[in-house]
Image (cartoon, rainbow, N blue to C red; front, side, top):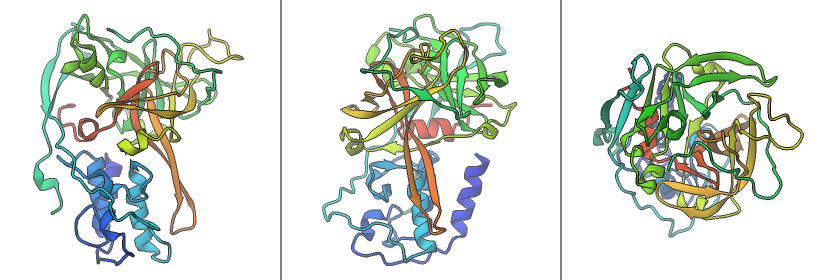
Length: 367
């Protein structure tokens, strides 16, 4: 979070004089100032930080690749630094600029691991950010989700962590790990699992191991209604004693419907599967893998599907898109943008939406 605040401060210091930009400027003007300025970059940053109650995804999708992410914000700043490089070649005249609905206000259960009871919790509601922020069945043991040959390959990103015996998580803040709700709780019994969190390096050595102080799960996950439960199958582990960012960190983005409907678009799932590809010893703990696949044009407002190879144990891992561009410094800038949390072999996950952005990035109930 410190990095985010620092980044926002840097954006605010950039010259904000309006700049003309061919005929498509209106389509990449999220702040509504009728010009491409640093305020547009700041607007996207604030959206990704969970600060907006409503939003217009199309106006923030600067490169029109279907994903609103940190890269969109950075591309604006790169353009302002070197205006000889076009920001966007063309945009259709009928580009949709509809503002989508307000985010839901969701209730969460917070369980402190210092409690002697595995069912104890308090509740809180994550409210919509104020408009002033605007600028004018349990899933523990599932079958393999392998489609054809197992195409998983080793992954060495220590920002993907092992929840020993229960699945995968990934670092999204200095003290925050994102995962699936079923990896940290049991909806049927109402209990919370005290996971051991392992950081495992590229040599399969546990370089750090610790417990979270608390776990946060949507109240609606604890229901017998499977559709509701699947919609809310995400969770947060709070680890105040360690700066997790030294092991790496993922940033969230939001995939638009047109990205998820195009089956040529790809996503990557990373995690700690319970069954390894051929050639690896399944008795060895902690081998991290990733696999790439295509989205399947099967989605709702809160979930989506893909044909990426996964296995039990991958639950709670990041579903991400690899992006990149050549900046004004003539260097390649690469991004891993998380657009979902893997929850079911079959294969599907929870979509990143403004509800999740606010829950993970602007949650005031962690302490």
